[in-house]
Image 1 (cartoon, rainbow, N blue to C red):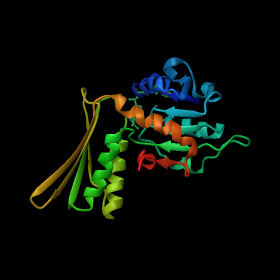
Image 2 (cartoon, helix red, strand yellow):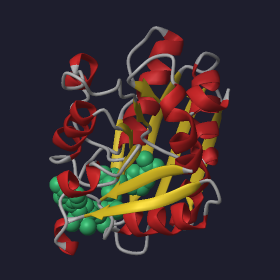
Image 3 (tube, protein in one colour):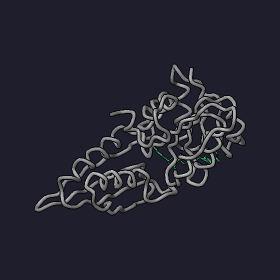
Image 4 (cartoon, rainbow, N blue to C red):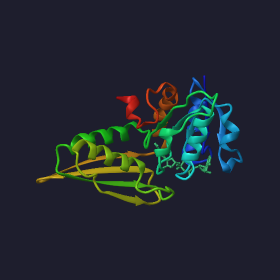
Length: 225
Ligand SMILES: NC(=O)c1ccc[n+]([C@@H]2O[C@H](COP(=O)([O-])OP(=O)(O)OC[C@H]3O[C@@H](n4cnc5c(N)ncnc54)[C@H](O)[C@@H]3O)[C@@H](O)[C@H]2O)c1
């Protein structure tokens, strides 16, 4: 059994992750950290082998550093924070090594969208990205859009495509990559209809984070392809 604690457990994603962990036969939910529940991450760290973080852009980094220091693996879904300091973070003396897996999107369809966009970018002249999310999302542009643009720029050796952000009630998480060339366009679109879409990817990350060859590892695609 993998002992899992969830940071942001009272949030939209955190609640879904807690339910998914409770439903997984090989995992045990050992802690729910969230100011809304009156429980800090420090209080649940001692019991956890893996922490899953779906919090806020301003708390994801301090949370992850606390996990690494305690020798607890961390799976980060939170977007819109500076990941740089994680590369140099080390456990406190006497604590075991801890791995970090960061994925801007845990939905398999979104990972495939990014991959197809990366491939298409090398064949068509120009592209732009439109990402659309619910109006409670704190960061813009989305981590998925930023990652898609990075992958496309790396594939072409050119500039990252422009990103347009839409925030409206009624939306969950959606992205279109529109590529244009002489007399034609190609649109690659992914729609997250509900948050269950992310759960198989989150559970896969929990199962695999302890065995990563490099840390931090960025992108669910590193586990899938
Ligand atoms: N990677 C993905 O696949 C994916 C998918 C959806 C959302 N997200 C990202 O996940 C994050 C959370 O999204 P959400 O919609 O669940 O947000 P939310 O606002 O519903 O939930 C965030 C929760 O974090 C809690 N929190 C704040 N500070 C905390 C701390 N220090 N320790 C523990 N908990 C703390 C808040 O009280 C809140 O309950 C966002 O960054 C969002 O962009 C990622």
